[in-house]
Image 1 (spheres, rainbow, N blue to C red):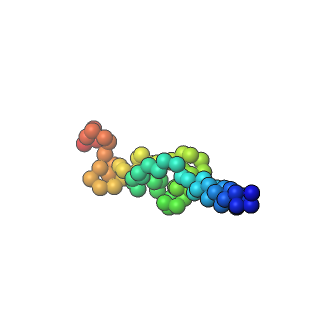
Image 2: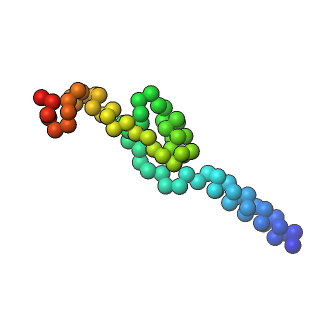
Image 3: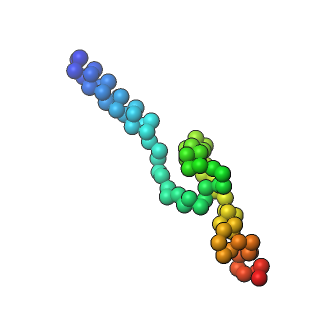
Length: 76
């Protein structure tokens, strides 16, 4: 029975490591969706711990040609 005990220990160890390293489904992340002032590591940590991805949908209007304009051209 000793060989089976060793085999069980090895399989259990590998399974435990696989479960611990599992992130589940990993979606593609647009870096523009990370809130201003957050690092990528902070965003990923928050998403993993809380199962919640935070994004700043208004951040895209703060750069480029769309700066200060309302969507659809109503601000012209």
